[in-house]
Length: 257
Image (cartoon, rainbow, N blue to C red):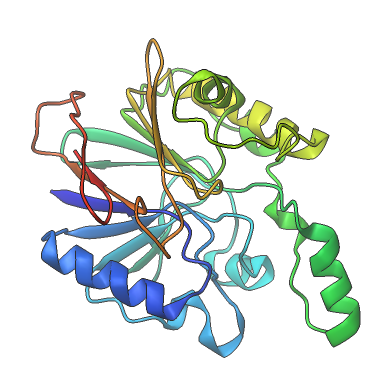
């Protein structure tokens, strides 16, 4: 089974068409978006986009969470939720298996542009920020320990993996304050607890930062995905390859294993 994992779509239909083209070219069975799909954004939300492949996603911090909760029933859950033909939402903490690989998804993150979005709401009367974007302690606490996950997909990156990434040559952000506010850091610390309960999975993938990277720690290869407007947006997982051994090669569009 071949899974194309992609970064933030942000409700951009033309970027999504490009993702679909690449999925066909790569012969992917599933497209999995690591959050910020732009779900429920008016009449042109992500759920209205063409889906020639089976599409799965976690939430990020740029969704209409009222609409997502209405359709999915909850932002937390133990199993994925099918919303429509070829469209499946993975609630925070859901676990599933593809072939012999055990996956966990956990969405959510803080919007550093919250204030500008609230100003937009006041000016235009259109809601563009939802408090449900934030990961809550009780959402993490409901997870069982010792999940023994092979692949963890989150929107933001756990703090433990973030600190390793920041020490690596792939760290290219020169603004030391970027996403270092207390709320953003708290979200990453909560994801540390998710990582612990997943028992340091061999593979972790995330979006949110819009920066492609590979950071190897003692236990986990953390893979950051760019947003889907440019290169580094995609990563291919082949479940038929050697279990827990992933060798990465970059191409002009994304990255494959």
